[in-house]
Length: 121
Image 1 (spheres, rainbow, N blue to C red):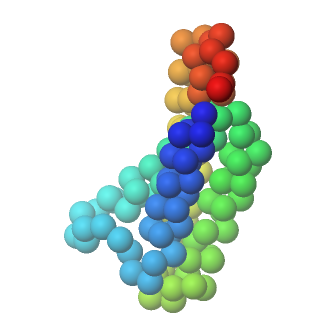
Image 2: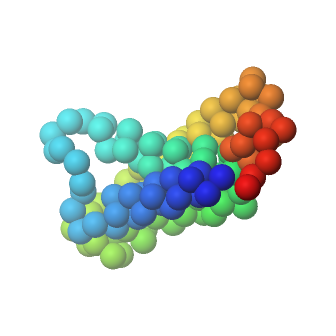
């Protein structure tokens, strides 16, 4: 379970770096690629949070998805606010939670990233 929390922490650090660097990370010139980045930056942590039973973190991710664009523009004025980025953030969260919840139902998982019946040592 500790490895799940470490993976979540790494994802959140990558998310923070990608959102708040002075210039947009990644290759330029590919239309819409940044929307995929936003989708993944919020979807993967949301899925991990759901699997770790940290539902409260999903709520914080939704709040962050809504304020990240204005905050990003305030911290890095060279970056522009884009409502489609916020939309991609929210879609990523929804998709991440849906994938995690579907996986838990399909495989009969308890939701704590440990096999059913396994005990943490």
